[in-house]
Amino acid sequence: MTTRVLSVASECAPLVKTGGLADVVGALPAALAGQGCEMRTLLPGYPAVLSQIGAGKVVLAEDDLFGGRVEVVAGRAAGLDLLILRAPHLFDRPGSIYLNAGGQDWTDNPERFAALSWMAARIGAEGVAGWRPDILHCHDWQAGLTPLYLRENGAATQVKTVMTIHNIAFHGLAPASSLDALRLPRWAFTPDGAEFWGRISALKAGLMFADRLTTVSPGYARELMTPEFGMGLDGVMRARAGVLSGILNGIDTEAWNPATDSAIVAYDAPPGKAANKARLVQEFGLPAGDGPLAIVISRLSEQKGLDLLIGALPQFLEQGGRLALLGSGDPGLERAFLDLAERHDGVGVRIGYDETLSHRMMAGGDAILVPSRFEPCGLTQLYGLRYGTIPVVSLTGGLTDTVISANDAALRAGVATGVQFTPVSVPALSDALDRLIALYAMPDVWRKMRLNAMAHPVGWETSAADYAALYQRLMTDG
Ligand code: ADP
Ligand code: GLC
Image (cartoon, rainbow, N blue to C red):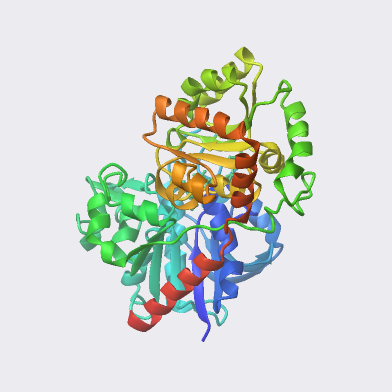
């Protein structure tokens, strides 16, 4: 029997993306199609999304939702079956999907994503154009109110809900005074419901009212239950441990395939990297040299721990290391990396977001650095494995679950794929970079690590089967 699933999210690659959430939401439908699941994706009607679905067909509408008319438009784009929430008063805005021109959250973000969740719950209750989901799969706080609205509209007994945490740092908070305006029931505004220290938390609503919870790695599933990583919701996570599972993200192994990637000099074994490395060194204006070329492709935020790299870098450069960084985000970090590039020949920095360049970097780099303070899953270390670009990662969340560190045991067994370090500190990162230099200087060991990395399974097969099994259990056991 086919399971019909509506995936509800604020981003979806390749249509609209600010981070890994989009990659995962964009990949799930195809990954699950082979597992007997029919998935459609409900997205906000940002201009960039609407322009890609053409005229589409209106399948559901509401005259006044949070200040204007909204329509759900069915369409297809990039191989995805989409339901788009056309609501010009909420989504027809230039620039970033979450932030205004001043870099602040849009003040009506609670309403914007409550509208998404409200319509998701209506689709659950009423169906659209003869299609009614068995399961609503909600991603992050933007879809967090869906299970609560579904209870309120009476459909929660027939339609099940799954809430996936991609990042527990973002709670989707709104003032208590917006309870009525957001059409939320007063009974739900308690510590056992959507209340979080006197405010409404869309994420907490999802965590409390969804039938099942998942997060994007087993490691992060364990960490979420601790005060260090739970961001104030660790008690909730412990209380709901019985319905929580960690399912590792995969990557699109066709879009990220070094043997066929049209953005690079394609290769199917590590030696093929040489031409890409030479190109990258030139592109970033770096000096020639025998040392490893490290890359970073990342949002520049506190989460990613890249401030530590600033402290650890001089020692790495002195030993012949070089760095090419592509990122954007925190203005202070952007400036700090641009300063570093001015002061050190061995550092090249591009501030911005550039998908094609990210492929060239993945192909040309020797190692990718991911020193995150927390990392629910992380995708760039997975691209690194696929391209034989050795991940140097902190021992946290999904980074723990995806990299086999080159300790003595792993080297002896010939299974190492990367370097892990802990704690997340400048000395520990410096030590990891020293290990990278040493490993790189042993060509046989290095080559073996690269071959291991490239052979490591990073696709969706196992995880898609895990999601399908979760849906199945939910349908049969409730
Ligand atoms: P997060 O979602 O926390 O940012 P992930 O590692 O899960 O971290 O996903 C980040 C995604 O965004 C990856 O696909 C990565 O390649 C991409 N990315 C991040 N920064 C940039 C950038 N400046 N240019 C191009 N791609 C980027
Ligand atoms: C979040 C996390 C990242 C994860 C991504 C996709 O953005 O920060 O670790 O890979 O979601 O699940």
